[in-house]
Length: 111
Image (cartoon, rainbow, N blue to C red; front, side):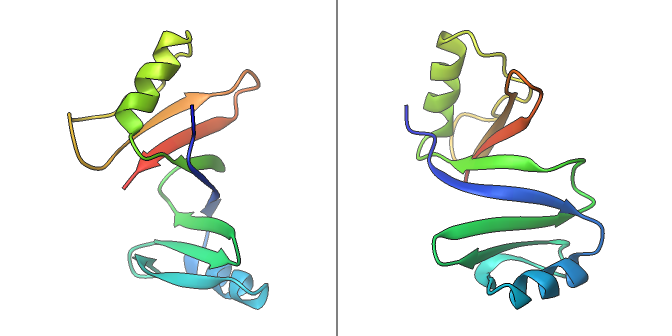
């Protein structure tokens, strides 16, 4: 099972301040991946990606981008992993959410 590209999704209190901070660390906003006005933005520095999200969820989330989230979700179910948020719809973009044994949130997000 390949979980896909990894990034950390951060719950931030002020998207503009957070974006400026991460720009200082060398991150750049990715084109067509959110905006300050939309209250979310994906940023990249080398091979490291982070997502900044204001008011969209509580806590930080480990995020993976699989090729086929529905297939991955079925494999997780087959291995007895409980799905907290299942994929909606039969095709196209989607995501599912699980928790690891310590309660950390993991999202598999296909876009």
